[in-house]
Image 1 (cartoon, rainbow over the protein chains, first blue to last red):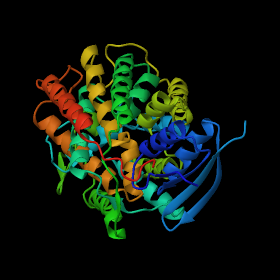
Image 2: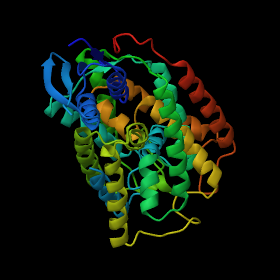
Image 3: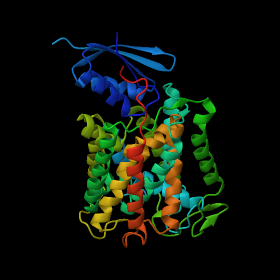
Length: 74
Length: 352
């Protein structure tokens, strides 16, 4: 998991913009996204899924949500 | 969610709230500013229980679902003035985005101009967001910080119970009331409070936001929030038709004026300010209930903005825009553009 997006403390829509930006620019097929509100967790999940990525897992670490996302196999 | 707000608003109007204003966050915060005497526009003074219900309903939902997160510290002073100018813009049009939808659902053609302006303002905001505009990260705060705004609104509600409206009286104890005008039109207290609490509760769950609806549509082509707005207009329209409240036209609409350019420009300013602040006025109330101190600052900015609007002759009336309303919109747009161009955060912790 070489790429992470840390969107903690940022309000919508910045976490979504950051995640989509990272997806677009990166060559990676896996990424971690950190957010700290439920709204951001939902929005990021929805956004990356619309781009053909999958949310593999969501871990709660204290007040932080760690989303593992993966590009869906074509 | 949108359907509940739409139908609820139309019902509240039927039960006594002002025309096409079953619920208007901007108008009602303005009425609250009047009730505590921050401005003395005699026709718009009432401690609107709906607003209090929104914050406390959202608080209840956030606590129940363990989403209460006291936080703040993301450029509060900037957010305060975004709130001030958002309110000034909204009062030139005479309504927040919710009321723009409700006016549309009541047949008010002027709302179309307002919505065009709103969408234009949000579009400008999305350009800034794409270019890296940011007010910075929030910090986690001690629980007490998250309780401040809900406590203030709870206190206002207690004041309202201590000093209730007396028929024909301009003042009870320390609270001001309107004898005539929109401020003298209100649904029964219990109905207003319960409607406010219910809407606050479910809006916290659904993240309902009218600004976000258009923003996400423009930025991401996402219709999730937008569908809520569509539901609001349709449900309010249907209930209005059933209750005989649908009156199509431009002239003579309740609490509205027909100066098309300024209906639109007022909402350009409001839409831009909402987009830069990250939420429509309703959403800012719900976020405040979740413990978001930055949203709370925006709410206070809006209340102060309402006072400024009426004290300086910026707010419109059914007769048209106020004597200094146009100047205020121009200044507000200039300020928001400066904020949009200058507020950027170094990309720390971003994609590496």
